[in-house]
Length: 286
Image (cartoon, rainbow, N blue to C red; front, top):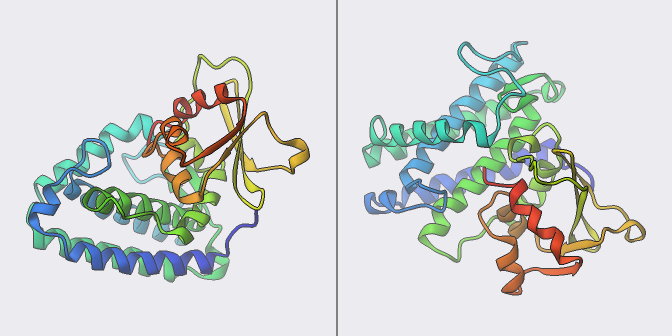
């Protein structure tokens, strides 16, 4: 499964960014107070988180282009952060921001638009020979290209958190879901949303099939996880989950439950059913 070109990722991010800004401009003050699909966050808290994360992306990319991939003062070293260890702090900052500086609807929309636009422009100004420079993130030393993938991840998943909460017909963009497969496979990124399970002693391998036998292999043992392209059928695992990429993006971020979707017929399962019990111990949300 080949990596998407950076120019194509940027094109999709820009398209989704424009759609996001159009959609949030239609939100009422009542909408902003509604519970989102992100646990314990109202819609306004999700929007304030995206304001913050856009500021982080912009700062990290600008520093990277200036030759600085080190953490800003007061930030943890790269490779020390994960969604589990940093989630509470991220949530508290988002809620505090939405209750204080961004408590007014018009201000929330205006600042969201400004930060989204400035973040996007920063990525659009990266030259072809700069996409692989070292860039800071608590999860790892990344690059502007990997940060662009993370922006797609944040924008796609949190847009779903907001708009699926208001309209259950809202779905992850299919083009974005296909690109996000690269996020799930990235060893630099996937440690952010993987939680080692100390009760898992024996190796567990799950294959995920999307279409035309393409998919992923999830191999976990001794507190580690590798997410790779799915091998040929001749080396298939004992357990294969057949699912579309949009639903998989909700599963791996703990926004949907694997076992209940199997029971509801949204996902088909071949082979040993017992292995799927590990899935939600690995992925607790991000």
